[in-house]
Amino acid sequence: MKISTKGRYAIRLLVDLAEHQENGYVSLKDIAARQEISKKYLEQIVVILNRPGILRTSHGQNGGYRLAKPANQYTVGEILRITEGGIAPVACLEDEINHCGRAKNCATLPIWTELYRIISEYLDSVTIQDILDKQQENYEYDFMI
Image 1 (tube, rainbow, N blue to C red):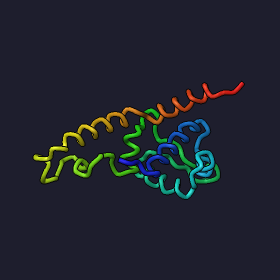
Image 2 (image 1 turned 60 degrees about the vertical axis):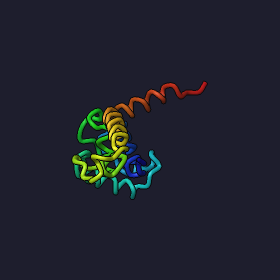
Image 3 (image 1 turned 30 degrees about the vertical axis):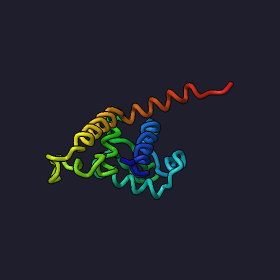
Image 4 (image 1 turned 45 degrees about the vertical axis):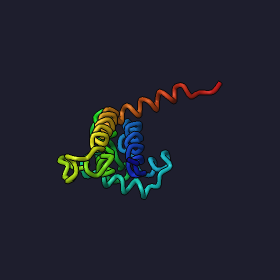
């Protein structure tokens, strides 16, 4: 499984919004500059995240984006499922019911099922707030004398 730039940048976008939430709505221009991501690409990601109500939008002079819920209520797994279309390591596990005709006789299916379980449990245990907290913790230890 390989996470695309869309999924990775979506996580960075949400962490940036969480970090600057106290400033109200945050412009994509500001996020693009801080994250070194093209504003055009962020616009595409915002469309994907707006559909399930992850973001709140405000138009006008002080417009921009903000998280619809607190950062601790968004998991990395949830965001990757939205942006990547799923996180299953093999195609036969993408749907809730495995439609593969070989599923009952597949010697490798238990490996992929367990891998999927481990990946899902881990990604669903990490929130946007966890990432932000870890980032701020790293900043505290990153100083020069």
